[in-house]
Image (cartoon, rainbow, N blue to C red; front, side):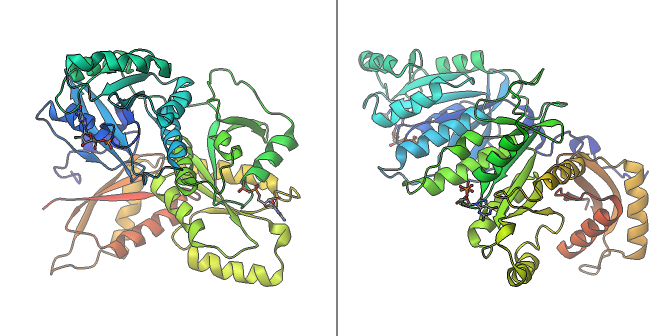
Length: 453
Ligand code: GDP
Ligand code: GDP
């Protein structure tokens, strides 16, 4: 058959993140220098099996596949900020909130030789309201003699301090047993099917995110408290729009404005990531009255990396005159060229102008994000395209595209099985043609190529 001898089963999954997405996640959090990395290494070093870096949605966070007595899970070491005295509490609290959203169990590591610091207490305060199970690890208890000191850590209100020495392996086996006791078999349900669709409202400061949120929540006067069969995170908000509830994720983070604080940048980017992680579609707000900046593009990059559907919202349209409109068109051509597929809506959160256009844009984007093309349809399309425009010859060889399949939705992910390498230009050509034929308006599309030698 056309399929050759590739093994298709490797590629057909429901989730683009693949196998690691099916494993529960243990997040290790805590201040710098308490021994988080040492603990992660200890967890991984126990066995000889693969230690692999799994490229996650976020870049500065490393996830590893681990196993303990035959059970597999992911371990993430959430670090990556600059230790500095002032912003530290804020940064770590944000880290803890991030873990609460995305992990299935959390280990807070504290340095028992130092005792509970003000920062540890701040994190514990955040973690005490976690619905995700939290274990307290009292590290650097290198000998039995030091056990007693750790008892003071009960004051953190996170239950028993589990004494360990990550460096020497003391107590870490017991800690792992405890972790597995509280860790669910499968990761949290990210996108409950049939529940309200999840929207992340993102953008640099002052573009009008809170104004839009207030407009949407206020105007409809129909903030839903509870929708049967769903549990809504307390940091999220359900807002009824166009007769349906929509879940705006992490609106608490949006309403709690942290400005001029050290670590604010870090907090803002972590908040954006966390929101994108738990959302299905992003509403990227841009201030249409101002020049598009580097900061807008950084948020856009995070969205592109996250693989979420996207609606670009040009806000403050009430301030846009003829001249500005002309400039903006040029800026869009230049700066948003990487997302030609994104849906665009012009609104004014202040006056309410065109706000009702958001719902059809969101719905369209999500429809594309969920869309699946049958293998038959895909391959008859592919055959035509390739017959008309075959891939360019490379190194004297004409690569052949044998077969294509849609391996995943959310976002739509395609795998092309080829003999020989396909140049980036040709991949872009295929993506353009694929979009022309099948749509996918509002959603990113991924095309992976599997080469058989
Ligand atoms: P992180 O910043 O939280 O990831 O901390 P690290 O894992 O980098 O450890 C910080 C320092 O604490 C390093 O010098 C480690 O060698 C040391 N350390 C980590 N675990 C232990 C332990 O169990 N006992 C002792 N005595 N030192 C430890
Ligand atoms: P956030 O930081 O993204 O949440 O932005 P805010 O919602 O706090 O808005 C920042 C500023 O822009 C505030 O002074 C708002 O009143 C103003 N603003 C928000 N939306 C609009 C709009 O559509 N038109 C105008 N003229 N001002 C707006």
